[in-house]
Image 1: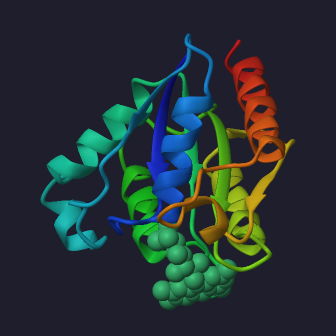
Image 2: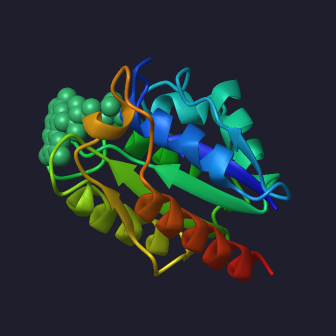
Length: 177
Ligand SMILES: Cc1cc2nc3c(=O)[nH]c(=O)nc-3n(C[C@H](O)[C@H](O)[C@H](O)COP(=O)(O)O)c2cc1C
């Protein structure tokens, strides 16, 4: 199974990118996770679109289309998903045919607070359903208190969280199959 991994944070020391990389390590050997680069995607503008889909958007859409599944790891900003992620998804949704159509999709996220991106993921789940992606229902993965796993000197995820991630990847594989 080839997974296109997307982190909703552009920050070098992002907890969410660290989580995505941790998933790539936990994943079974027959699961390949390639991290898409959304850092060059411009702000959506219908006038820009009228001149043609930007190359960075075409590349992102091709990454999604070429993968069996999509894994979005999102931060939470003001109880929703970051603009950077929303913008990338909005742009990709303009590529035809719809690269999200029927795409097996999993999501997770991490934040320093205790809720671990619950509210952002509720919003993202709704958006992905609207794009007709097939979103994994369970397990949902909200990694709270990110610093205790990913701050310098910390050893990474605990076994319980790793177990949820393994289960989510199995659920994602079942959708792909
Ligand atoms: C504009 C902004 C709004 C934020 N709002 C929330 C929030 O609603 N809930 C939350 O748990 N964390 C919130 N945070 C804190 C982020 O969870 C934190 O910055 C986190 O490290 C971002 O993810 P990253 O480490 O992957 O970049 C917010 C941060 C920013 C910059």
